[in-house]
Image 1 (spheres, rainbow, N blue to C red):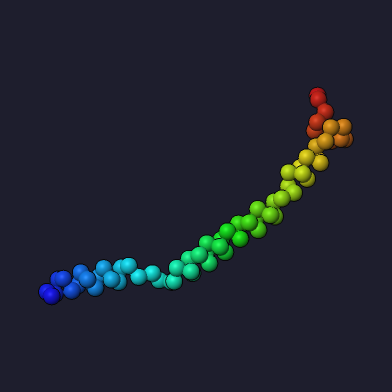
Image 2 (spheres, rainbow, N blue to C red):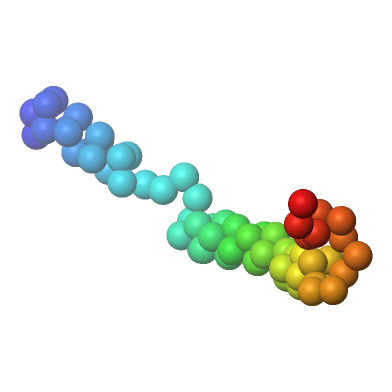
Length: 66
């Protein structure tokens, strides 16, 4: 083989290798998914708390007309 052909073969072989095994990418994706799920779980009751503060007949002075 010529020098150029061997350099091209070496470059293409090195470019296709992954820095971590494929199962590592799956682990990272699963960790991101779980962490986003925890963030979403932390907001599970926010809308209920906001609705309880502004129920009709409350003594909130901001709801009264001027």
